[in-house]
Image 1 (spheres, helix red, strand yellow):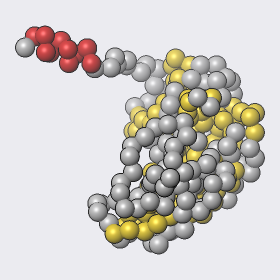
Image 2 (tube, rainbow, N blue to C red; image 1 turned 120 degrees about the vertical axis):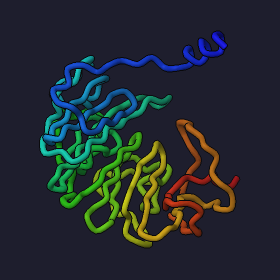
Image 3 (tube, one colour; image 1 turned 180 degrees about the vertical axis):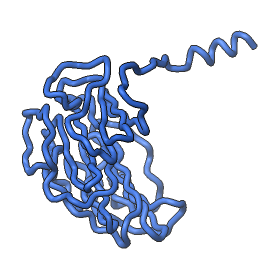
Length: 247
């Protein structure tokens, strides 16, 4: 019994207490190499890797203790980023209580949503174009999605496998509307896909092959996806998901 307990203990990842949080957080979110805490005051603090300015403190210096985020009045904060065979990057976006969105960090796929794509990072917050009534935000590896007050979903950033959901594989540097059959009540961006929960149960699938479920994969180049397809619901959530491409 003792050896079994010891083995289980060895499998547990190490934990660390985050110090220097100047308020008690109401939520915490993590990207690939940094994390952010949101406070009830509408302020936020981030820590971790900062090579791409993803902490928003005006520098590119990694931080072992939290630093204050560059905007206030935050409703939700969404850190993201990636480290793959193609390279690495990191960005953070904040949805403000008024409905606008600000982002900072990497912008090589248009993740900052400011109508530009550049390898030059932004260590300061820039406003995302065209978003003024957002109520929810979610960050994938390279793309960002926002749901607005009437259930419309807008995404931007990398779109090489259709994760932006606009029936193309073209990267988008500004928020791009996703056509859904009904208003969304929840949206979540994954690594290379996006899921939305609509008012009536349906599953939305990105990809041409619908007769079998997608295999869970995490490659640098996942299978390509095409248009959004609607199929009968099999669970509580609507989902835009990647399906393997026919060979």
